[in-house]
Picture: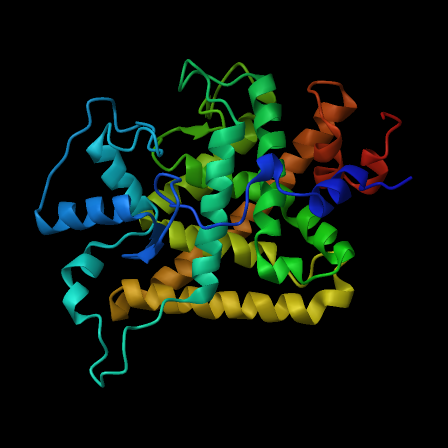
Length: 350
């Protein structure tokens, strides 16, 4: 029996919902026209951000700075739209110095980093897919239940596969190495996505359906340890560092392309080469956006998010194993194949 049957089907299958790999705006999900001011975006969000900076507009939100920003509702709250532009990587200084974006020697515009551009594009695609296949709860910000947690994990793992399939470096790998990378990274993906998604919250983890998991929730006691550690060791440092979208996608890809992952031996060289290129691009980005004296410290602090992410991911796997063993939650086939050891995931369920 193929222990990775469901995972293989998703990796080899077509994208969910027929979504193409066309670039989408990282802010609202509309069709992107390129990278503008540091983020893959549409002309609408590009113009909105430029006008805001040039005219020095100051906005305020009437709804606790947690409004939905998508293609249909992007004009509803300018404050949240501007916050989203900043969080997705747009930079004020890029607008302010727009006239000076020509090199002194006249050799043309300073080129964007194609590797980071590809990561931003893949993230925008999956973000749009998430909004199209995941229904937000009517009662936004309510406390999550055990069912919300398992549903969110399954949805996020499905989206992880779609994200990877939009990366050329992943597509070039043999199927066995692709599956090995996905299995190795899956728990880290859940932890990192939850942490960054919750950066606007103080003491809770935000799930994919916008329900919240407070660190000490009595409703889901089995995941309190993981939720608290995500808040303390990932979300809080991310907020303190004012981590942006570019840094988030770069760090996620660096963790994903791990040449030491079990089962990628035949692709070790290619994966290691990809990770080194990602590190180089990541460092260049940090050097461009940080004052020179702070670059090494910021680069190091961002990379130092990886060890706690891995440790928390291991705790999460233990919790999933316990939940399956004692029947505490519904663990579907994809979750078993990605999160549990082969001997644990090979049950007799169809």
